[in-house]
Image (cartoon, rainbow, N blue to C red):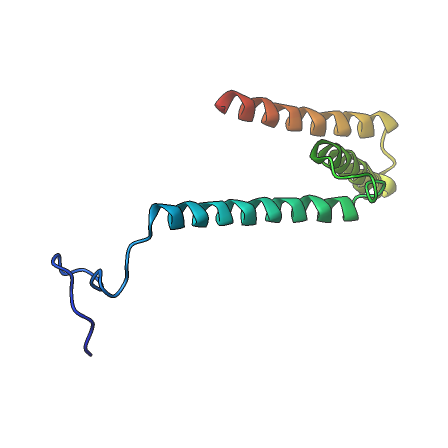
Length: 117
């Protein structure tokens, strides 16, 4: 199996086969990559807004989308808890304690991540 001519260091194709990018090309590639990343984030927030009840058509504030998603997840957790415990006839305060425990865990994680910054 033959390969192309080696560079003086013996690694990969020679510079004649693969020219280096100019500074402008590097800058253009970086800008395109950043635009692609931002577009992916926008599409993710749009998808969340489409899924979470009450967010569709509310404009696209990322803070509102995140707050609504958190609210919806808390409601789903409470509903799941209710369904799981329905047959066990638990004390109604247990649901409140469960929700408070979940919120405490979220706040603790948020506090820990804020301290890392």
